[in-house]
Image (cartoon, rainbow, N blue to C red):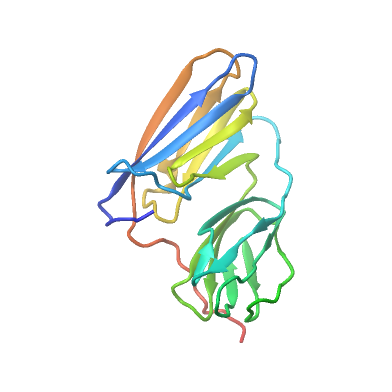
Length: 217
């Protein structure tokens, strides 16, 4: 994604498809004002009733070309994340976010033990060597989640019948969080489709950014 100025707008269109005798599917597309897809936008869907959760699964946040890859990683609460360094230079990864406070000593090539993300919330990553590096781990209790692809598209499958709270987030979206939440109904049967659209302002630079005031040298 190539974000523009604060005046840039994107449109989010969501299509809820209910297939006969099957669970529903939620299709989300995020595009900019020129019709280009916006990638790595987090989307979560939480049922209004019940306590369905997603089992924690291992994930990877890599480091390449002085960047976190992916820029945004979405994991279930309790998941472990590996932080390999496949860059040509050393990195010193840290986060002082309330959801996870950790530091990985300077390294390249060697492997640190995986980090467990056991609290929901946004974890902002930084590198103590390269201030321009910023990454995000979005830790969610929602049972259905994902991020948009290069075309700005995401398909969430096998949603049981019921009401859902759908939340959209990206470090480049400037709108208030309350405007990025919608309630939808998944019927699970029939062929009717529902649509909703949001117009979202994009930042030129991502927010929030990492802060290392509490770094333990």
